[in-house]
Image (tube, helix red, strand yellow):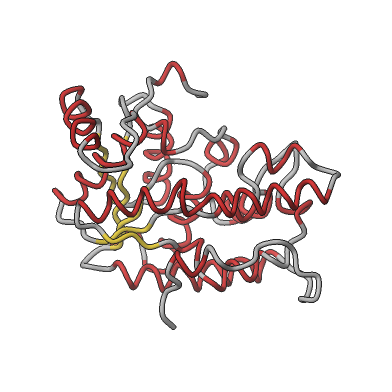
Length: 269
């Protein structure tokens, strides 16, 4: 089965379809496992490389890949402004837990400044620390001769990783509207800019959470069982606990890849 291109994925519906059978955690895992198996094979050359921020999504992905392919075949890559950046600390925790090779990029100020100059020359690019971090990350991959990598975009939109998804708990109509709105923003706000920088650096990006089988399975999950005011992305947290992701990673607050170059003291620890 071919991989689902992200341009096709973002056209698929994500709001609950109650004509489908009820969901369960075991079958959700099977859909994720199947998607990771295809994506892992697609990027294998000679290792499977993934972006690892030390958050829930990437750490769960790492756990699934290790279960499928074994730790020796996997390399995780992380960027952060400082060795004490939360992404770096939690990514190290995940990499050590699952016994995988781990490459960490800590850019210097001259590297960041140079990346911003390069961004200014790309039409339509925002010259920000967040975008500079993305460009530097993919330049780093290219310098390591990594031409394909697994990334984890899309899952926040699918299972309610953002606060707007959660604030309408109890109001199904408003919650549906927000899930739909966040899904429609995914391509323009995240995927197009990411792909543009990755292609400049000669890196192909694969998205296991945006595979058709994953999206179609998550459609079975009612919004109130995907996320709540108390806890976001509830099915993923349950799977992460089952697969041995460390509890501090499961419980950490979301900060996003755009904060990779932020100072550690400005971020939730």
